[in-house]
Length: 203
Image (cartoon, rainbow, N blue to C red):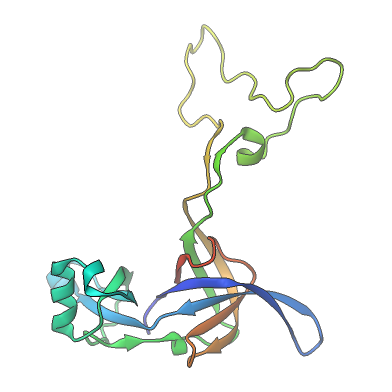
């Protein structure tokens, strides 16, 4: 079994279980993915399988990649990702779908979080604010960032205002609620990183 698959986030909704409880879920369109390369310890130093996802036209694919896909007899693909795996039971050009997942299985979803631009300490690092009354002018200001004479500088890694979001985030132990192989849909309990249409990796 491949350790992971690629897909796109469709959106969030909610479903009802047999007891009538509301379960918030996220719908992901998973695959179909194609095996584009198989790496072994003898040739590459480690075992891995490379999967390709999202069919594109030839004008959006570079010539070396296009010739590689055409040799395998598979469609031209936009994304490629490696998954480490010791079992080498894959064939080049093999199609992999969401049938490998089962209801109740726990998965880890990795994606790029929504970028929120430049943010201050309260929003970015959950800092507390200053007093709001009695003439205080330190409501959301960062305050002191270090001593003066000693050390005479600001230490690296100081939590300050800056870019928030737009980074790789992984959420583990998400339960699979439903699998639809015909439409390539995977329904997981809870939320996953990123906006609608975002590329996600499910492991």
